[in-house]
Amino acid sequence: MKIKKISSANGVITVPGDKSISHRAVMLGALADGTSEIYGFLMGEDCLSTIACFRDMGIDIEVNNEKVVVHGKGLHGLSKPEKILYTGNSGTTTRLLCGILAGQSFEAEITGDASICKRPMKRVTVPLSEMGADINGEYCPILIKPSALHGITYETPVASAQVKTAILLAGMYADGETVVIESEKSRDHTERMLGAMGANIHSEGLRVTIGQTERLKPQSFKVPADISSAAFFMTLAAIMPDSCVTIKNVGVNETRTGIIDVLRDMGADLTVDNVREAGGEQIADITVKTSELHGTQISGEIIPRLIDEIPIIAVAAVFADGETVIRDAQELKVKETNRIRAVVDELKKCGADITETEDGMIIRGGKKVHGGHFLAYGDHRMAMSLAVLAQKAEGESTIDNVSCIDISYPSFFDDLYSLGEQSD
Ligand code: S3P
Image 1: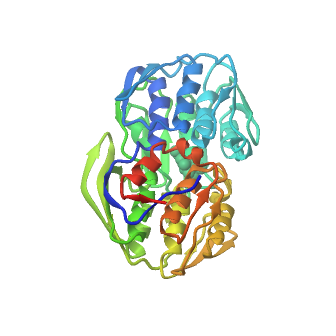
Image 2: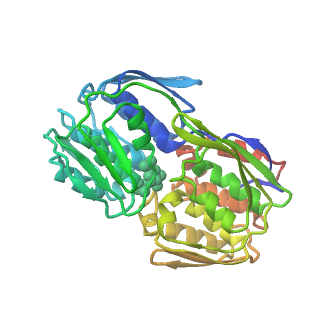
Image 3: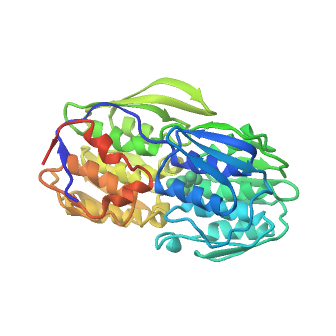
């Protein structure tokens, strides 16, 4: 698709609901005793895959414009699916489902699309097996048979909220206590939501403990706008001339705000206003204006707090003076695509000075870049990052197969073009 360009970005927008929280609201709502309502649910393909899987396990889920209604049947109320559970492109659905299915009294199989079938699953099957689960497989399809679970203390080798959550979900079905200890703190939405629902869970620093749980209380979930989606417009406003964009009601849970810290560190004119609480999460309005960006260093504990934003941070770095070095980000190799390789290959096409490293990349920014014929690799965040890059690059750009954007942000181009007049 040829990417239409705007010359500057101005306006107030609300990006769609948080993907991580939307998945969890459906899953935990399905396991609660009674009816939960979800407001601000992300109607992206990944979250719709989660709904489909739970419908296949007998959960009645109503979807309408205003809300999603999940008729939960309790922790032991799911029924055996008649077919293989299909998780599409969604790593979160796949890994979290492993944790839930490990505790069920029926056999089930999970698989997804070509990308999911290449993503590593041992990171969840190993700890779940240690808990006594009958689950195997390095890759999808994964077969899970009924088995009694017991609590374990598990130190996760990589900071991953999906792994942590899979273990905690299984922990609700396990005898004794289950403890997850992380090397760095990953997003903590599960802990917050389970706590509010009455699970026997507590967190202290990098350690989360959950005990066997009898029942979860249904909730009225309010999903904040997804900071990972807001990141595209935060970056766009910073790199485009004469721009000012406000993104409303964005989730600013501190396990997710690495993008704010990095953009500020790069010199962005960025303000976070009207910070308040909604549905157990902090939300705020974020305003970014045209900025003179400079390079930065990104590594260590901040990485899990911005793991999904690295492709768009790389775009910001292309337009920033000086060098940006991203390290400790080897996890990017096992996302929807190898995001280190994909970012480096695509940004090179527009003339950017960028080098791939073992665990990240080095970008020497501030040089003129031109449009190109880009590939998205079926990866929604690659496609949106390249669409932002195309706005500022000289000349014309095309991106193959932008439909993958529907995975997390179906209205992305509508929101982009609401911010400025399009020209060809
Ligand atoms: C997610 C956790 C992260 C993130 C993904 C969503 C979640 O993955 O990249 O988009 O909802 O728990 P990892 O757990 O693999 O780091």
